[in-house]
Every structure is written in structure tokens, then in C-alpha cells.
Image 1 (cartoon, rainbow, N blue to C red):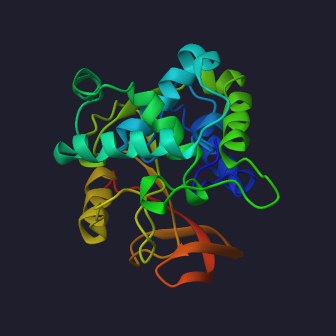
Image 2 (tube, rainbow, N blue to C red):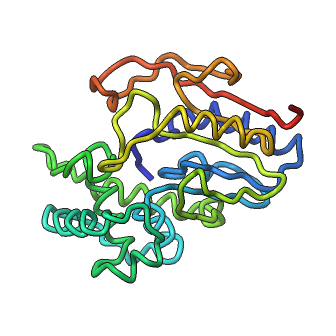
Image 3 (spheres, rainbow, N blue to C red):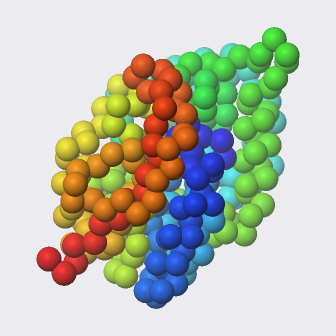
Length: 259
């Protein structure tokens, strides 16, 4: 699925590190804490693969595509985007909220809000990025994202993913699990409206969680107690606070189980 901050470009570099660790350490559960479009999650092979994200609309969309991808409309327009955005703002008063509760309160299926939100927003960054209207060359952004997700849904690994919605701090982690975290990068614009990410609190959570489970982390920079195991310095970001800047994509690892 096309998604802002997607690891699709870097999966061929990152996945081998994760997969080798799973194989060599007999890991039984892989948990992607901030799964986004699941473009890395769908390439991991493990007994159980869990994909979590804070966004109820995104997770509902993934779950619907797994259940029945044929129900999704192949095209979207501004009227649908505006209707979904209005409903999103009305319900977001209590955000984040349990998917089942939200679906009971909404007049629009949550997956349908998610489809127009993530397929037809600028840079696939959700409602906060604005409506991505067709380009002068008649490029249909919604349909491109729709077809991409439909293709992804045919992958056997994707079909087996357990999608769940929740705050990373409240996730129940199974035993013998390996975690992967691709949180909002420090210094970048948030994907969700009125959502702020506390990075210092996140670093402390990673340190504490690493006493129970090893963790791979994608970021541009982290405190010194996080070990860099891979980096690539030709990544160009378009979601920085100053819009465009050169960045260095890095993969970190932390494991404090012996401390």
C-alpha cells in the first residue's frame, strides 16, 4: 500500500537483517509497532506476524482488504473525501478510539473513511495532508493507490498478517517476539491531524521494552545507546518541517535483556 514514510524503497536492505535474526534466534512472533502501509511487514516470514498502528481508519482499511478487497471502490472524488473528512473530525474528538466503538458511532464504514483518506490525500499522508486532486495530466492518485493495495492483498504473507489498532505504549507483546519500530521521524510533519509524537517518551519506552524483547528501529537519529547496524545516505524526504531535505536512513538495534 502506498504510504507516506513507507519502507518499500529500503525493504530490500532492512528485511534481511530482521529475517536473519528471526531465523537464527527461533523467534515465533514478529510485531511491527507502526505498520503504516505494511510494506515491510508483508515481507517478513514468522510463525505469527502482527501489524499495529494508531490510526483506526488505516487498520480498518487493511482488515477490509484482507476480508474482501472487491468491495472497495476503484475511484474516489472530492465529495467523498469531504464527507469522510467531516466524519473523521467529528469522531476524532475521542481519538484514539477502539475500532469497534467507532464503527458503531459512524454513519460511514470505517474502512471507507480509510480508503479515501489514505488513497486520495496528498503524498498518501492522511487527511492532514489535504485532498490530492487529479493532476493536469489526468493522473488518478486514488486509483493508483487502490491498484497498488489490491495487488498487495494477493500476497500470501499479507493475507496472514494480524492487523490491530492501538497506542504503542499499550500493546501487549507476546513472549519470544521481535519488534520493529518505524515511528514518526523526529523533525517531520505528523500524519494525523492534531497528533503530536513525544520522542523522549518513545525513547524511554524502547529502552524499557528492550529489557524483554530485541528491537529493530528505523530512524534518522537516536540517542547513543541505540546501535546503528545499517545506513543509507541518499534518501530524499518531502515531509520535513522545511519540506525538502536530504536525510540519512538508518536501522538501529537495541537489546537490553541481559541488563
